[in-house]
Length: 304
Length: 307
Image 1 (spheres, one colour):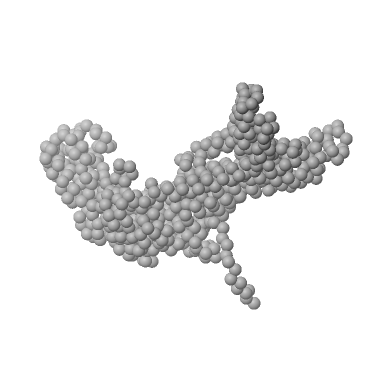
Image 2 (cartoon, chains in turn brown, cyan):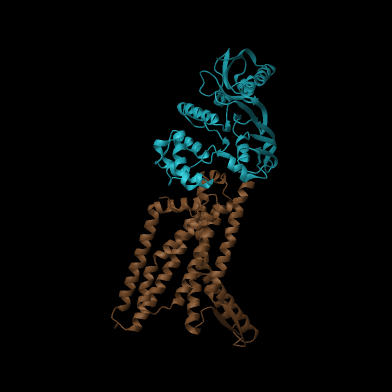
């Protein structure tokens, strides 16, 4: 009996995406990264659990605190993972094609620059998301112990996902511009380090200096308050800063989506989106801009 | 099949191609001969729509490289001189990947890869990682790759480069087979000797300009493949070597008994000296070389092509 012809629309993944993912999953590196990361995260979570319970009576309250500690430890691990792994997945995506002399053959196909760049970006992002999803079972330990609200998970997931998007697109852009993969990788890591550590550090130092310099009342206080707001916005551009700041706001005011800054000693208030929303918005916009720039650069190679 | 119309390309102030016009007839094997840096690879890249011309246009299978690059890409298979493979792919996967890039339906790809690997005599290597092939095998794999979308035109940049004599013969046989299948082939070579038994048409290119083009017999009549000219003379050997080296069509100069005459080694023979000149120029160039030697005081005793 012949199967009926349903004339269903066919969907096919980009050949470059399939090639990149297949190549990645065939290498021992993918499984090594996954195993090492899950081993460290899982092992340290259990260790944290054991240490937290050491000498304490097991009550609902302590159990919740342990759950919260494990949750934030895992979020920190996710941020680290994204910062270390995501850039390496795309930093060589285009420069390796050039170094291996495979780029001309690829460009000679009817695939457009946008199709090539998109496939490489989705492939890098896809593998990062795979690593992130692989750690989700570990989060169940934190939820089992309590002390963590789903809203906190939303904050963490938004920040981590947006970071993954930015770092992969940043790696891809630098890869398109760089002549060597080594240069692209070093350049991407330098920028990611600047984003993760440099921005919040500069914001904190700046805020403290201005506070000390402009201590007083009247316009000076307003200026210092405005600088505080600017510092909060700057801190929001770092995933760690955004998660911590959003969590603080949520714990103190119960607000998830917004923060309210009081200016000039409480004379008037300024309402802003929560730091994790600022981070998500800015990172996704920056990712889109980097994607466009990468496409334009790859297309421009043909004009040379 | 290919009609190049007043094509020019410059990089900054350097002219790579100057007003090149050329016609490659359908079904022909067309050899573009010129030394390194003469512009032949640039011309192929432009025809493959990888580089935009500074001026002019070309029609490939009726499509303009300037206005319809995507249409051109579907008609053209381009093989660069130096090309890489993906180490994570086997030979069959490499072909199937490029077939997918050209939109060949998924169900047809595996069979297509096998057919093409059989055509280039690499079927027995279908499951070998593509980076573990010998240079000759890799070049054949490259030929199979450019055939993945069944193009009408093949643009092959020095397909014979770095091949041993046996691989040369195999490549020649393969290209003739492709021609018999109706493909139009435009290939480049550094000298006439590489293409004389293969091509139906040829052109010579020098400093970005086509100097000669037409059916192979006509081109060979004006510019035979490279051969050796023995020059016997009296006088200053260093002067003769310098004059010969600066002449058009000279590939190499050797003085028998000296390891490398081109390095400017002093003449050791007192009276009659002999130089062996590897020559790739036209008969007119050979005549000009002889005139130049005599005009500059070199007493030429004999000037003859060796068989």
